Length: 451
Image (cartoon, rainbow, N blue to C red; front, side, top):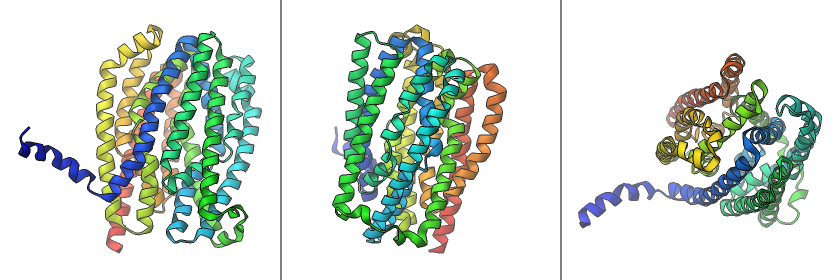
């Protein structure tokens, strides 16, 4: 290849990576992306084995149980990882290590209390889930058993936030891979032994518990290294002047998380409730395949939030714009390429890997890809609003969108099933992205003129 042509081809890549912020962002994302890629491959193998072993209907029941527990947990959650990233990061930048430790301690205490509350809700609501979601009251015990995931993850959110703010993304990656390997091993044993729904559920439960223990231990060791062995004795009164602000942030992120349960995190439950576990099985597979386009985007989100928050504390608005612009190029390009691959290969993957009985999942997959293309391109929108000091804006927007979506869910899903649910989810992603980006643009223009 001629040298001039070689230089011409390398120039855009050199320009893209020459900024230290982007290099750090991609390095941290790279750890998680590598882990997510490996975990996604292992998860796909898990899904294939489980889908072939259980059949469409039991596959749908499994999805309903797992998602039910996740939804109840999120209902009580205050997203402590986001609070830790913002405020531990803020005090760390200010070299106020005592208050940084106090924020983490507060987050841990709140998360422990909410975990106990969430597990109690699982025990209380399990009969409802079995009767109206699984359509089988005998599965009540399975809902309760899988609910043990919640107390096992009693401080996982706070732990993840701490690991992120100190750039320990490699440790998160290692734990995620280890959890996936263990889960796949247990599911493979169950598949060979021709076990059933209960054995599969136990496999997922054990993997989740081990993953939670790994993240928690890593965070505790990190806290000890950063703040000493007595960090957990730091007095909470140090945060007295910040309690109101911390509570405001936590409540708004909780509201946003609660609304997200309605708008995007409870899709399988809506289909299970209004239709059947069979359709839930089709939709679960469509969502699983659509998650392939999320592979680099999820780690980008996790590594972008601490970086944007750090730059916002320093009032480096130009750097924030640069991170968002380059991040959109990365995420959008990958999502478009991955979507094209799924459009052409989707039917073959479903037919020959998951068996032909799952083919009705393909139309839902196509619908979901459109919304994810827009959502992934602007993946940084929530992180930017939190970092810019507007945690209430996502809650307000999502509340309006949730009301609209629930109305159409009630009107359309009972009649048109899982395809209507896919259309509504895709529409939500597009509307959410447009509104958030418009707001962020206005905020950035205002802050740029003030400095």
